[in-house]
Length: 222
Length: 222
Image (cartoon, rainbow over all chains, first blue to last red; front, side, top):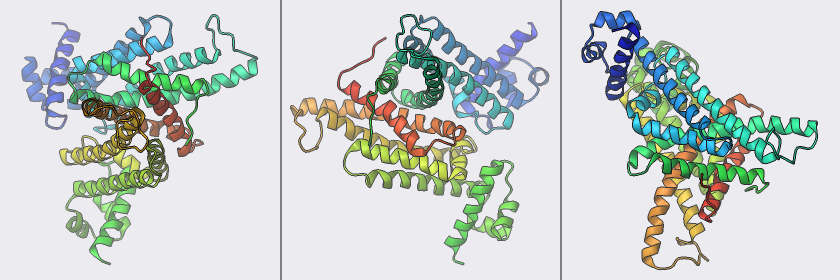
């Protein structure tokens, strides 16, 4: 079996074991045994228990980001439909790859700096995807963008200011949305009857409808 | 100095050291020295490094929950004003007690089961406060509650169903909102010019306005 395949096989087993036992209680012995491979070979391929965990983390994070991106890109040009498709792919991923999500969400923080950095990078990748969808949505709503038919762009200076405002706002909304989605995976676990699509729809309605209204000038004040 | 005061003094120092160095790199030696107390005395009072971290975590979590509750309760009867005041107190706390938040938010997860349990409990306390404000808001909007002047309650059965729906919805919104607020503390750190009140207002506008519209039947569909 070629090295790459062998590594993937070890990682498959490791994700299951780390998800089940937690990082500290997991042993390379058990992972090697379940993967049907010798322990020295695991160390040769993946260096250490930490290296093995990092490999799990990076692969699952890359899969999650790819699922989000592919769904979003496949959903046509409207930003809110792309956001909906991306969020839906996220909740479907979490529902279908529970072990991956346990490793990414529950166990990764603070194990080591290398692991924390890998988690932060994955989060940044998702955040920047989401922010760019939101930004497109804001530009479309305010007419400040290259959307055909947009008729509200009035002057380069105002357009420039709107774009800056839009970037900061988009980043704000992306942080709120990614944090909300993270947290809702706990809710989803306690409500197994709820579909990932239904959860996405509720979240879109909470956030997107409110955001559009704010852009339309319908502002809540205390 | 009485034991309780001595303990508080050790915890004050420990929060600063844990926030600065992280759990693993922190030493009880340094904490004892900075607190001006002998190391055996620290162990006598707080049992172990883990016990010390747990004491920090519990105290700071209790302070955060109390800040949220007091602000919410002091803001009058309208649920959205109570939610606004509570969220605002949260962001003010994070801005003013950065060390406490680093300990609660970044370092607590997965250090040990006891620590994870303490974090989960604090999160549940905040979540249930938020959910109850949301629930009050939903009931007020749908007229299903003891709000004077509510005129849409029509029959116990319908009222009971609405209350059930309301609980699940409120719990959903609370998860989304608490996750969003958690995540926005990172955004706040990168935008030091933004006030906690401004951040709260943006978040309220994203979430509350959208939720009210959904309750009014203005639903987004893909």
